[in-house]
Amino acid sequence: QVLQERISLPVEYEEDYGLWDFLREVQHQDQPERCLECYRLRLEHTARRAAELDADVFTTTLLTSKRQDVSALKRIGEECGRQHGVDFLFRDWKGLSEDNRDEAKKMGLYRQQYCGCIFSEEERYRNTTRHLYQGPGPASGDRRWSDADD
Image (cartoon, rainbow, N blue to C red; front, side, top):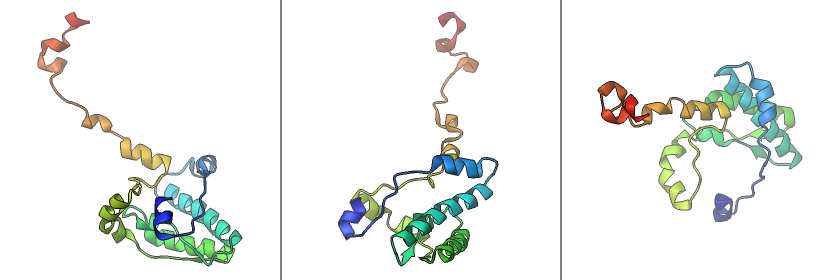
C-alpha cells in the first residue's frame, strides 16, 4: 500500500496465497518444472482477474527478479493473456532490482529476498548451520564442553 499511496496507483490486492492449489500442482516436481508451473498458476489467476476487472494489461513483479526465468514468464504470461483476452505487459525489469534498492528503502518498501514459494524459502534458509558460531567445542579439548559438566 505504501507505493500505491505515493504514486496514486490503482492496485487490486489478493489476500489468498493459494498455497494448497500450488502444493497440489507441484508436489512431484523439481525446479525448474516447479517454477514453470508456479508461473502458470500465478499468471493464469492474474490474467483471469484482470479480465474480470476489464483491465487493459496485467504483469508480474517476478519480472524484477534476477533469479527468475524472464523468457518463460513472457511466454506463459502471453499464453494466459491470450486465453483471457488481456495483454501481458512484458518488460525485463531486472535492472530495477539493483538500481532502485536505495529508492525502495527511502520509501519503506518491502523487498522480499525470494520469490515467495515455500520451496524457495526453504532453499534460502537451508544450511544455516554454517552461519552458526563455530568456536571451541568438544573436539578441541575445551573444558567448557567436558562430560563432567553434564
